[in-house]
Length: 164
Image (tube, rainbow, N blue to C red; front, side, top):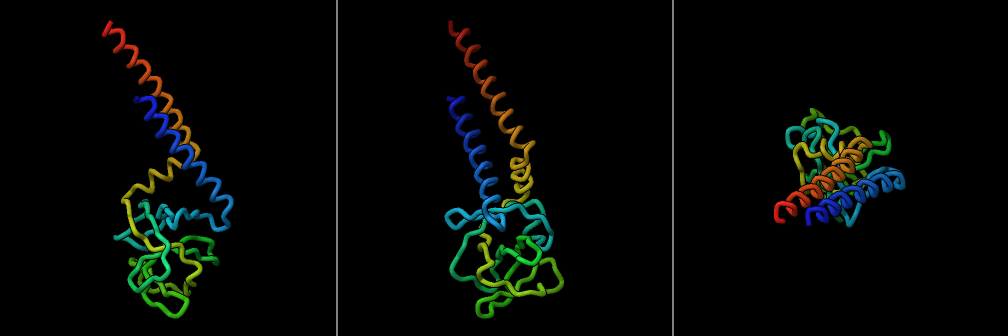
Protein backbone atom coordinates (compact mmCIF):
# COMPACT_ATOMS: atom_id res chain seq x y z
CA UNK A 1 0.00 0.00 0.00
CA UNK A 2 2.74 2.47 0.98
CA UNK A 3 4.80 1.46 -2.04
CA UNK A 4 1.85 2.09 -4.37
CA UNK A 5 1.20 5.49 -2.80
CA UNK A 6 4.87 6.45 -3.16
CA UNK A 7 4.88 5.38 -6.80
CA UNK A 8 1.77 7.45 -7.48
CA UNK A 9 3.21 10.57 -5.79
CA UNK A 10 6.57 10.22 -7.55
CA UNK A 11 4.83 9.53 -10.85
CA UNK A 12 2.66 12.63 -10.52
CA UNK A 13 5.68 14.81 -9.69
CA UNK A 14 7.73 13.45 -12.59
CA UNK A 15 4.86 13.79 -15.08
CA UNK A 16 4.12 17.33 -13.86
CA UNK A 17 7.78 18.35 -14.19
CA UNK A 18 7.97 16.81 -17.66
CA UNK A 19 4.78 18.62 -18.69
CA UNK A 20 6.09 21.97 -17.44
CA UNK A 21 9.44 21.51 -19.20
CA UNK A 22 7.81 20.51 -22.49
CA UNK A 23 5.13 23.21 -22.29
CA UNK A 24 7.66 25.95 -21.55
CA UNK A 25 9.69 24.83 -24.53
CA UNK A 26 6.69 24.77 -26.87
CA UNK A 27 5.11 28.06 -25.76
CA UNK A 28 6.95 31.15 -26.93
CA UNK A 29 6.30 33.07 -23.76
CA UNK A 30 7.02 30.16 -21.45
CA UNK A 31 3.93 29.98 -19.21
CA UNK A 32 1.65 27.02 -19.87
CA UNK A 33 -2.04 27.51 -19.13
CA UNK A 34 -4.10 24.42 -18.29
CA UNK A 35 -7.89 24.67 -18.09
CA UNK A 36 -7.53 28.43 -17.68
CA UNK A 37 -5.10 28.12 -14.76
CA UNK A 38 -1.42 29.02 -14.73
CA UNK A 39 1.10 29.11 -11.93
CA UNK A 40 4.37 30.86 -11.30
CA UNK A 41 6.97 31.65 -8.69
CA UNK A 42 7.32 35.35 -7.89
CA UNK A 43 10.84 36.69 -8.51
CA UNK A 44 10.53 40.40 -7.68
CA UNK A 45 9.29 42.41 -4.74
CA UNK A 46 7.07 44.81 -6.67
CA UNK A 47 3.91 43.45 -4.98
CA UNK A 48 5.28 43.12 -1.44
CA UNK A 49 3.77 42.68 1.22
CA UNK A 50 0.76 41.00 -0.37
CA UNK A 51 2.88 38.87 -2.71
CA UNK A 52 6.55 38.40 -1.84
CA UNK A 53 9.59 37.01 -3.62
CA UNK A 54 9.44 33.21 -3.46
CA UNK A 55 5.65 33.03 -3.22
CA UNK A 56 3.76 30.66 -5.52
CA UNK A 57 0.82 32.20 -7.35
CA UNK A 58 -2.05 30.61 -9.23
CA UNK A 59 -3.89 32.63 -11.85
CA UNK A 60 -7.23 32.02 -13.55
CA UNK A 61 -8.02 33.50 -16.94
CA UNK A 62 -11.23 35.52 -17.13
CA UNK A 63 -13.18 37.39 -19.78
CA UNK A 64 -12.99 40.69 -17.93
CA UNK A 65 -10.74 42.23 -15.30
CA UNK A 66 -11.50 45.20 -13.06
CA UNK A 67 -9.66 47.93 -11.17
CA UNK A 68 -8.15 46.36 -8.06
CA UNK A 69 -7.59 42.92 -9.62
CA UNK A 70 -4.06 41.57 -9.36
CA UNK A 71 -3.14 40.12 -12.74
CA UNK A 72 -0.20 38.34 -14.31
CA UNK A 73 0.66 39.46 -17.81
CA UNK A 74 3.37 38.97 -20.39
CA UNK A 75 5.49 42.01 -21.18
CA UNK A 76 6.70 41.48 -24.74
CA UNK A 77 9.31 44.23 -24.46
CA UNK A 78 11.15 42.71 -21.50
CA UNK A 79 10.13 39.12 -22.24
CA UNK A 80 9.03 38.68 -18.62
CA UNK A 81 5.86 37.89 -16.75
CA UNK A 82 4.76 40.62 -14.39
CA UNK A 83 2.20 40.45 -11.60
CA UNK A 84 0.72 43.86 -10.76
CA UNK A 85 -2.58 45.42 -9.71
CA UNK A 86 -4.91 47.05 -12.25
CA UNK A 87 -5.34 50.75 -11.47
CA UNK A 88 -7.21 51.82 -14.61
CA UNK A 89 -9.22 50.10 -17.34
CA UNK A 90 -9.16 51.95 -20.65
CA UNK A 91 -10.83 50.18 -23.56
CA UNK A 92 -8.78 47.10 -24.39
CA UNK A 93 -5.83 48.00 -22.17
CA UNK A 94 -5.02 48.17 -18.48
CA UNK A 95 -2.81 50.51 -16.48
CA UNK A 96 -1.01 48.60 -13.74
CA UNK A 97 1.16 49.25 -10.73
CA UNK A 98 3.06 47.11 -8.28
CA UNK A 99 1.81 47.65 -4.71
CA UNK A 100 5.37 48.29 -3.52
CA UNK A 101 6.22 50.65 -6.40
CA UNK A 102 5.95 54.44 -6.08
CA UNK A 103 4.67 54.98 -9.62
CA UNK A 104 2.46 53.20 -12.12
CA UNK A 105 4.00 51.17 -14.92
CA UNK A 106 4.98 53.37 -17.88
CA UNK A 107 3.20 51.12 -20.38
CA UNK A 108 -0.32 49.86 -21.00
CA UNK A 109 -1.13 46.17 -20.84
CA UNK A 110 -3.27 44.88 -23.73
CA UNK A 111 -6.01 42.42 -22.76
CA UNK A 112 -4.36 39.83 -25.01
CA UNK A 113 -1.22 39.88 -22.82
CA UNK A 114 -3.05 38.99 -19.60
CA UNK A 115 -2.53 35.43 -18.39
CA UNK A 116 -5.06 35.70 -15.59
CA UNK A 117 -6.15 37.09 -12.25
CA UNK A 118 -4.26 35.93 -9.17
CA UNK A 119 -6.66 33.65 -7.27
CA UNK A 120 -4.26 32.06 -4.78
CA UNK A 121 -0.95 32.91 -3.15
CA UNK A 122 1.03 30.24 -1.33
CA UNK A 123 3.59 32.01 0.81
CA UNK A 124 7.15 30.74 0.25
CA UNK A 125 6.01 27.67 -1.68
CA UNK A 126 7.45 29.02 -4.93
CA UNK A 127 10.95 28.32 -3.63
CA UNK A 128 10.00 24.67 -3.14
CA UNK A 129 8.44 24.45 -6.61
CA UNK A 130 11.48 26.08 -8.23
CA UNK A 131 13.74 23.58 -6.52
CA UNK A 132 11.59 20.60 -7.55
CA UNK A 133 11.65 21.81 -11.16
CA UNK A 134 15.43 22.08 -11.20
CA UNK A 135 17.58 19.13 -12.33
CA UNK A 136 18.84 18.62 -8.76
CA UNK A 137 15.30 18.73 -7.42
CA UNK A 138 14.13 16.14 -9.92
CA UNK A 139 17.04 13.88 -8.94
CA UNK A 140 16.13 14.35 -5.25
CA UNK A 141 12.48 13.49 -5.90
CA UNK A 142 13.33 10.35 -7.85
CA UNK A 143 16.18 9.34 -5.51
CA UNK A 144 14.12 10.05 -2.40
CA UNK A 145 11.22 8.07 -3.83
CA UNK A 146 13.43 5.10 -4.56
CA UNK A 147 14.93 5.31 -1.05
CA UNK A 148 11.46 5.41 0.52
CA UNK A 149 10.36 2.51 -1.66
CA UNK A 150 13.35 0.43 -0.51
CA UNK A 151 12.73 1.38 3.14
CA UNK A 152 9.06 0.44 2.82
CA UNK A 153 10.13 -2.92 1.37
CA UNK A 154 12.57 -3.48 4.23
CA UNK A 155 9.93 -2.46 6.79
CA UNK A 156 7.44 -4.90 5.27
CA UNK A 157 9.97 -7.73 5.51
CA UNK A 158 10.83 -6.87 9.14
CA UNK A 159 7.16 -6.93 10.16
CA UNK A 160 6.61 -10.19 8.26
CA UNK A 161 9.48 -11.87 10.11
CA UNK A 162 8.20 -10.61 13.49
CA UNK A 163 4.78 -12.12 12.78
CA UNK A 164 6.29 -15.54 12.00
